[in-house]
Length: 516
Image (cartoon, rainbow, N blue to C red; front, side):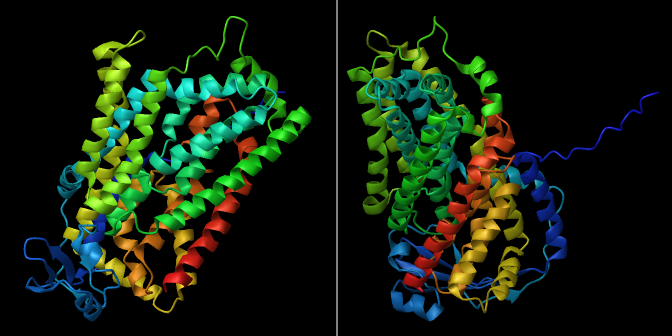
């Protein structure tokens, strides 16, 4: 019997973030021809004159005293200190001032021009990201990360879960402070053999590293790649709502640690209960330590301890600078660069120093690893430029405002959470989605009389609940690295997704009820 050849089936492959943003740029240009032009009056703060500046859609401007009473007259529900302290650096829309304007369609030339101009306008954020990436690159090259983690294994003999606990804590802190997700990939070659020797499976490895860091990022406190960028795009200071995020991160951390403890104990007692049991032999063959390998050979010297101390203290100093000294991206970048120089000196010198070329290469490699993140910010900002120049951003804002006009605050914020959950699949870059969506969606909070930081928090919870699952994000690269099936990962992670959405929703509603 002659076999019947099957026609190859078409398989849809989700494009990457750059392609998605390019497509959205084209869509934005087309939208300027189709969507009616219009604008709100804009409000900004003029530092030299110490006055608020009101600019109407047809051009005239007016200066008014920078007082809370004037903001109340304008219907702007923002503390005047956010303007005078420099926390709000962008123009914001004044509610109930929308007017239709003459159409301003964009040409095809706007596509490349907006990409370039958007990148130029985002240069302060990009420099900050490059410096932070270079700093992380040097710390990694010093071996301080690995030595610090592996030094802990010597203290966990007989208490194997303690290592998982400590690694997960470090990953949660790394996620909430600086979004250490891509960088966490470097820990797999060091820690996976240790976890195997302790009797754990591939799920535990990904859970302790990727899942823990992602939960930390979902509940970001000062992560510059999500909450800082999103707050900036929303026109607010990222320190607003920070205590809510700290409490949320603590509770989420307890949940994840408890979940990891339950699963780890279950697998250790009976390996057959592992979700990836059918693949355990292949996994061990790929990652188990052979007799000529010893993943614990790394000295946690005083120099490496000092490097980690310098790395960690940069973050509370950044928070202090923003909250009390009016720092913004250029000053924050200079602060981290100062610590990077100290760490580069410690890494280059000493008995095991890698020399000046080694630390410079490590800094450049660390910075270059974040070029994609930086360019995404510029491209996404270019889309906003097209919408703003075509005067259709405010039209979409007015339309969205009309949709939520009669929504109560709790219903509004839960709707926002679900919107960001869907958008997380389409735009998996946290920074890209932040600068793309915040200028349009954050002001909607003003229409229901809640702080904009609540929308920023909804963005964090919604997007990262999706990024635990989305093939467009980092999860597929992680699973491929460990040769793990997606179905096994989904079985393990869906309770965490449900937790983020349910607990996140409860936290958002609580914020709304307190501040409404």
